Image (cartoon, rainbow, N blue to C red; front, side):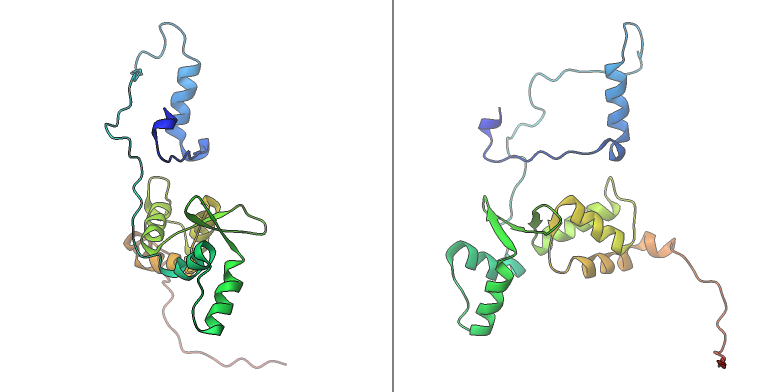
Length: 188
């Protein structure tokens, strides 16, 4: 069946992040005749999707990746010598695999480079998606990197998203100490 797809991706979701599916798999594996009658099981003999298109890639502007992409794919550099040198230096940290740009890490695996709209989607999912937990900006940026994604403004984008998140601001730590004038302290 895989050969009928042009491209596919397999993502592993750990048991800690998918407790309901983990519980169902444990129940199914330990089921004895006559037990667990409240579980409805159905065997699918054909795919539940009519179309074989699972993911659609945008032909959007590459944004921050354009210069790196042009240099790595076609060897094209800007006319300006300083800009050309910067692109050459920056491109050393990147690699193209299967028409996708990845950033090499020293202590991490390859990180998939994202465009602005893809990055916005990943931030929303990590922050408030099905496995999201409205974490802080630093924690969220770490989770994005751990998930295998990269873009240059990752940390500032996470910070901006947390500051715009209504739930985070509404239920965040509120300082209830009344303001006081500052007093000078003498040091001995």
